[in-house]
Image 1: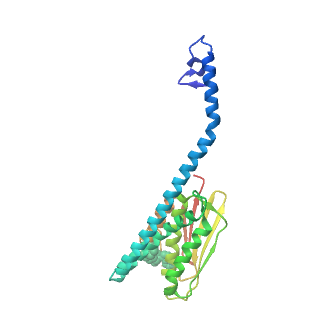
Image 2: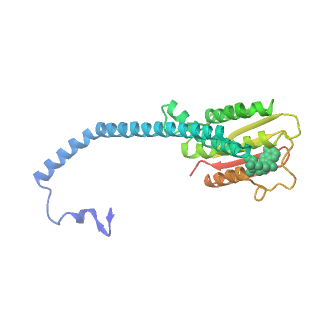
Image 3: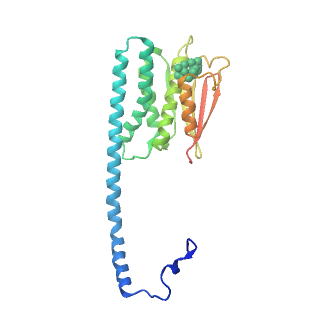
Length: 245
Ligand SMILES: Nc1ncnc2c1ncn2[C@@H]1O[C@H](COP(=O)(O)OP(=O)(O)O)[C@@H](O)[C@H]1O
Ligand SMILES: [Mg+2]
């Protein structure tokens, strides 16, 4: 083994054999090492419970922020301000749901993707259902466990695309079906959000037809190192990214 150009044996002065004291010290160190696993286990347990506690506090803080935004929206006197606050509440709410889910399981580092997306859709369905009547939300997703780091942007992306489908997809057409289809191809995940409504506006281009919602989708897809493909009719967004990195 070479350490900065020297071999390991050259670290002991030449011609100096290991003394009995050195050997005894090695025995003591060996005994200490034998005890280490339980010390290590204890340290791991402590840091895990601290991490859980931290996650729990994040969950509570986010829930409080979501409620405060809701209160503020309730006090808004004009519709655009109220709508803007409701959109913000939906966005922060989708991250809050991630922490709700994490706090309900024993796993701190893995998010059950179908369960998470199902919660996002349930909230969107109940908050927009009354406005949009009979729009049906469908989800197909195999069991996939994602890191919280990946799951948070995925949740926000789905929140934006489904909100758009509800808001813009069925203008002047009968309410229909919005589907979220997620599949895994090796290390890649492909999320497809589509609706059978009016389709995207003529000459729609992802680069220049966007409001804040689709800009958020583009920004988060880039953060995941992914790509977006768009089909104008039926309005379909495919977001693909790799979980390998
Ligand atoms: N599913 C859809 N069906 C029809 N039009 C859509 C759909 N999704 C997005 N759009 C169009 O893309 C535009 C930009 O969306 P977005 O960036 O989220 O901004 P916003 O929702 O605030 O208008 C929308 O105004 C709408 O014209
Ligand atoms: Mg939008």
